[in-house]
Amino acid sequence: MSPRRARRRGPFDRPDGRGAGRPVEAVPGVDRVETSPDGDWVVRNVSGPALGKAYRCPGCEQEIRSGVPHIVSWPAWPGGEDERRHWHTACWRNRANRGPGRSRY
Image (cartoon, rainbow, N blue to C red; front, top):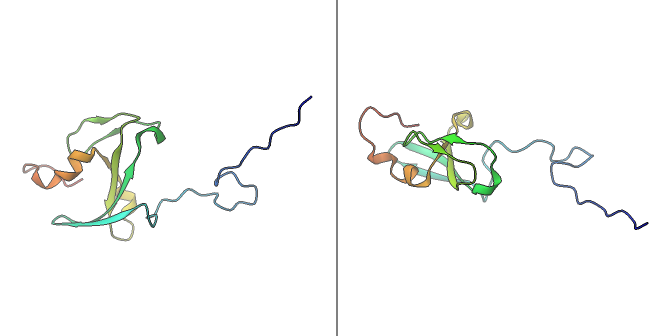
C-alpha cells in the first residue's frame, strides 16, 4: 500500500481559522480606483474561469455568462461594496456614452 499524499490546503481551508472569510472590500494590488465624471469607482478585473454564476450587465442589460472575463465595480465610498455590479468590459468603458434615461449602475 502506498503512503497517502498530503493535500495542500487553500488559504480559506486552514484549521486555525486564519483566512476563513473571503475578502469583500478592496484588495490592494488587485483593485484600482477609477475617477470619472460619474464619480470614483473601485474596479476589479475578473477572469472568466473563476466563476460559476451568470450576471446581468447594467450597461447593455445582457447576460454575462460563466467563463467570460468581465469587470466588477462599486462606488468608492464607505459601504459602496454593497452596490457591486458586474459589467462587460466594453460596457464599462462606454458607460459615459449611454443615452438619457439609463441609470449609472
